[in-house]
Image 1 (cartoon, rainbow, N blue to C red):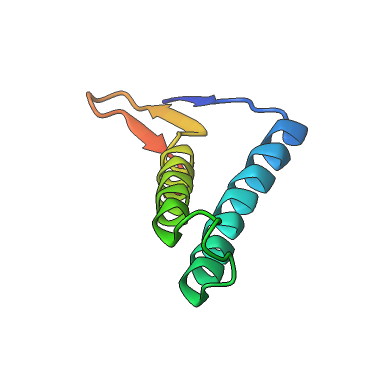
Image 2 (tube, rainbow, N blue to C red):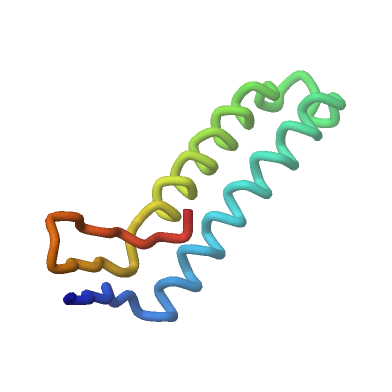
Length: 84
């Protein structure tokens, strides 16, 4: 069996996680503030933040599916390990 570990630098990983958290936080706060009406008539509507939240969650989901380890056993099955 061969095991391949995919490398990603820890500072880059921390940066990605912080960016995902920031986008999700901006989306949630924007939806709440927009729904309450604190942005006024000149501010963006709440649905804009719903789109931001959706894009952030989709991007985070896709990155969490990225494999960090690939196992190739002797038979014909290949295993991919990821966070999800």
